[in-house]
Image (cartoon, rainbow, N blue to C red; front, side):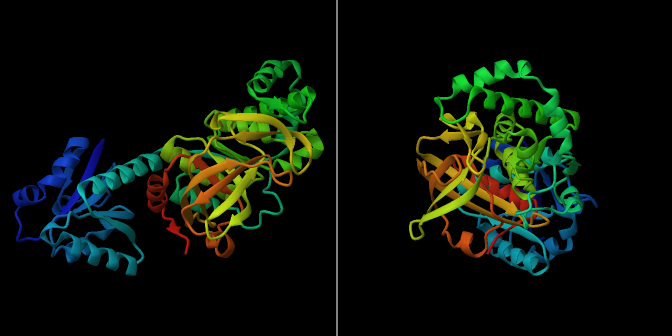
Length: 412
């Protein structure tokens, strides 16, 4: 990968001495990246293209960085190996930036730690590039109970580079009515045969769910959507089925698909996919089991079958109708994440361990009993809405990097 290092050093230091004094770190960076060193006098009026960070080569550069702040990236990553007073200077710069509404962080520690940070922020830059130009559909109005889950469309266009597209729900109904049972026989068979069991729904119910899937997929293709959220509850009276399978299968195909018209959670899912390439599970925080041990259950009725270790075909919990997916996992590491606010300005991330999948009859069908690293006071005092996003594996550092670079701050 290419990497721009905007390099600041005291006028008392020669350029040659920068590479000599910091050779351990710079050699490690050069082994992995095609580095372009840019010195302050070489900066133009626009930010260089590509992943760009600041190398603090010595102390005494604070005023120099301050004078060039508008030519640095919006989120400033300051790399300091600690030699030549570079750490002290970086801390002063970081403090000044925060006082003046600019955000960033210092990468400092063993070379391996700094390299991991560089990798995370370079990957985050690539992910943000992939977000630019994405079309995000809002099919139907958000559900009435989601009173804190919408976003400012203009802010999303400016900060994330995504276009929010409103689509009437009746287009889904018209498409559903046009799809025949014969057209979905094969995918119905495949969905049933790959499950380890079918509990409540009849085959006819699965056929209806697949007809709805075909309708929603047609809208995704017609509007050229890269992600969408669907007001699935308002479809139940008119289609007599649920959207759980449609969302599950489209998530499996790499189209982040969210429930209930929740715009903030959908955008979180999209950011996670851009940063990691992984599928996500949108879920309700359903029950705290042990506050001191940070254990709680997350649950929802739709999940991509390919994300699970195995799955059971169920009915939808709230309506006791249609078709839902009960995903089953073996114990593993996971990550819980949510970015929200009208401008997607706040975020929460926690590493987690999946302890078991529960089967409480009074919760949605896929139920994950997790032990989070972060205290659960967040959920009870400053939660960012209802739904949260869960991903297989530990991706906390990489996801933190992309959300910081998108302008979000950890919720406090």
